[in-house]
Length: 305
Image 1 (spheres, rainbow, N blue to C red):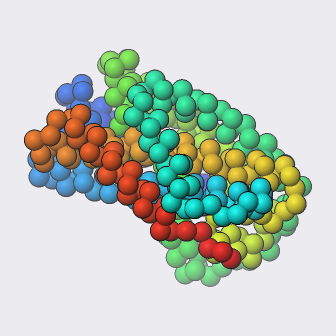
Image 2 (cartoon, rainbow, N blue to C red):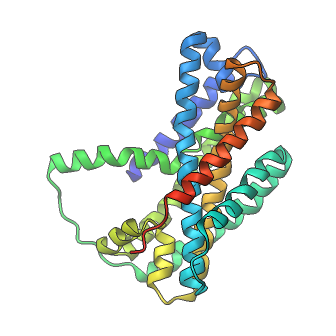
Image 3 (tube, rainbow, N blue to C red):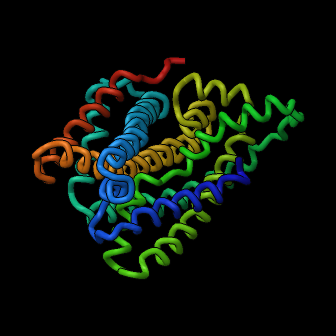
């Protein structure tokens, strides 16, 4: 999985950026491009599938950030478990509001989150080195290895995917660089993929080697992030403080990126299937997504295990 991480990440996102920039319309978004290349019917079907590939991830992040904050309040601060309806609403609404505030505000918020996240992630990864245990390595049967690899591929793709933001990213590069947009986009995506894969794999290996297989299974059963689990099972105040913070920032930044893609594709679908203006379609789409994410966060609670 580690060997496949970089080529899957870079080549897939580069291909998507090239596809978006292949349109003859300089203002085209993803839905416009697929219609231009594949026709109206096929284009709308692909646009729908594109939206459906992104939107469930927003539901997952809505659940994840609610569980992470709830776990922090209960296990680290010793508070009673808060109302899930109120907590999830207070967490999801500000994230949606950031996206509604405009591109400049959104990019400033991204910058405020991403740089501290990278720094904290690196520090935590190196700090966990002292907890590393030598894993019991055994050579699996070829059939088991093949099945495990196949089932792990979607997880790998999900972990490194930022495809939801690529369409908007590519259009911004086209606005700024014109005919050089493809070259500039590929350069940025290459550096992004290198940094992303390096920091994430360092963190993943550090967490896996610091926990036993039984502990990883417990974290899965409790439906909380590995960082929240580390904070809960250790008495280390450093991990207890930074662990949930990293999970919170990571989920928030990923939520914003995926919300951008879901919003763009849903706007295209609504305007092409109704008489609504782009502004009204945007407002309707945001409202529908907000309540859907809120509902999922309320209903899918963390296990008490």
